Image (cartoon, rainbow, N blue to C red; front, side):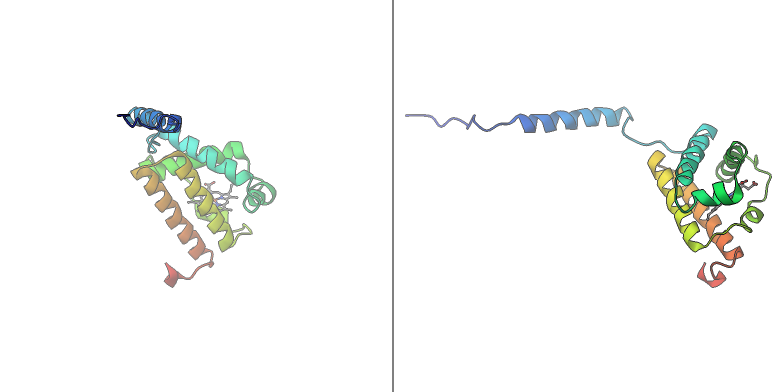
Length: 159
Ligand code: HEM
């Protein structure tokens, strides 16, 4: 009586490949290599700010506001922004300035703020995840709302 053998013609290599990839992914995940970290220190703030302004610089809407209109001195502006965000997020009190007046003469509307927020949020998401990452996005959005309100771009009632 012939015994029915499993069909050995079926190529099972892709299953083995999937299992291997799953195994390797789990090992990396356990080692913390696939997870993004939260924003933890000044070095992380610097990384976030540098990456954000790299994006701003190449953005067709925001780039010209900084580079053509304000003629921003980046070597000066970036350290100011490190101190601003470390004060907002960690309470370092390193920032001593007043940000709003700098924005009053700029040729900006709601669309600029929408783009600014989009770039800021996507930069945070690109690099970090966690409570501080959520907090900095919320704070950025709320400051952007206040700026827009003070610039007369949105109605106080809308907030
Ligand atoms: C439409 C969106 C925005 C544009 C186009 C913009 C542009 C600018 C420009 C041109 C400057 C002056 C840089 C220089 O010194 O040359 C500046 C300064 C600054 N901006 Fe903005 N900005 C925007 C939104 C925001 C938002 C939402 C925040 C905060 C969450 C912010 C925080 C600051 C701070 C802290 C400074 C430094 C002020 C100082 O020198 O003390 N900006 N921004």
